[in-house]
Length: 316
Image (cartoon, rainbow, N blue to C red; front, side, top):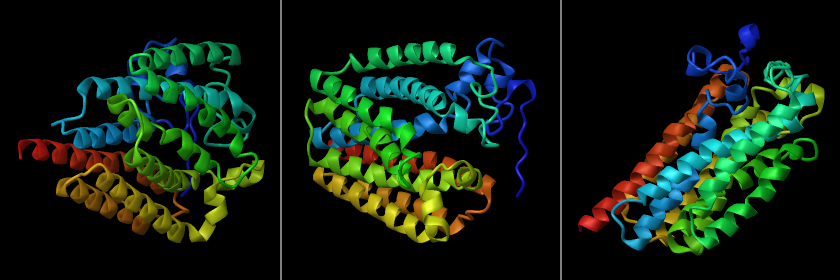
């Protein structure tokens, strides 16, 4: 299917059309909103889910009826701020590459809507919001949060040197699996570590689907990805990645002493992941994007199972 790219009115080609950024945001704010991908919440949801899953597992392990609501709110604010900061940083690093790829050449920096200097100012502002959120947690969580800056910093460069940039995205995006538990207990344990490793496999899987949108342009400009690496073997690779993620999430739930509702949620989530694999057409860019975005629903399924399990266990 041929994709049409629209730069009219400063819109970004692959952004959601008719979103509040285009219709209600002040004119001066729109380029920065697009730079932070505010019109595409899927990114911060994917960053948020490991945090919320971990907080829910911590509730199960601690005997609480629900995850700490204050922690959930802080994680959401932090995910939105740091996802926006990450996108801004990534676009600064990739501005030359983005200018050569049809889907990304209309982004604010390569299209000239935002200067690199102002993008850096915006990056600092978002990072300060993330810092304020981080300082609201206990000392161990603060140290752990600062450690996450390493995988965040190196990820944008990995597409130039390895066929596995999605692995490094997993290192960064799954860090919340450690944070949710640490915010509750002030330490780590087996459950969050298993959740973190499972999150890495899940991230490689969904971002491989996403990367199939750009594989032709990526080949032209020399950008590497697991989509290009797996090619026609993408479906078997996804079976291994999603299967491994499901197994590790199940082991994490067991390590947290979860009950049947948590495992039921994981089972329903596994069916959703299987649907993605069966439905996938790696040559249909629009479908790849839709399946990638469907991982928000997967996140809700797993989270709901964990929360319901904690509530029922407390009642019993």
